[in-house]
Image 1 (tube, rainbow, N blue to C red):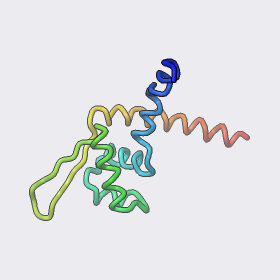
Image 2 (spheres, rainbow, N blue to C red):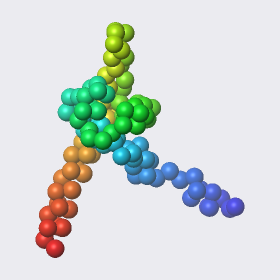
Image 3 (spheres, helix red, strand yellow):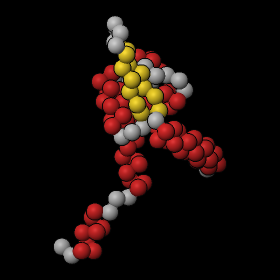
Image 4 (cartoon, rainbow, N blue to C red):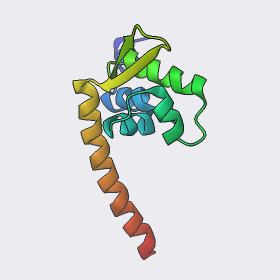
Length: 113
């Protein structure tokens, strides 16, 4: 393999990296819920229809690993955990607002046809 081919294979696309970080059926609704003030998984289970607790926990943990959320555990009975947005997660919310605006334009466009 020549150097040019290797460089192309190893190139990291920022957009692809970003999309991979938020891919997952429930990640955007989770971020949105946390942004709206829901911090506990039990609140999210009530607010996000049809999400399974196991999948919710998996996606929360992935977003903690990616630096989008922080997790705070409280040493009480029953155990309590709360999630919050990191500064990186708050930047994601800004992007989601812009995507929401684009979605409105897209809806208007589809209604015109």
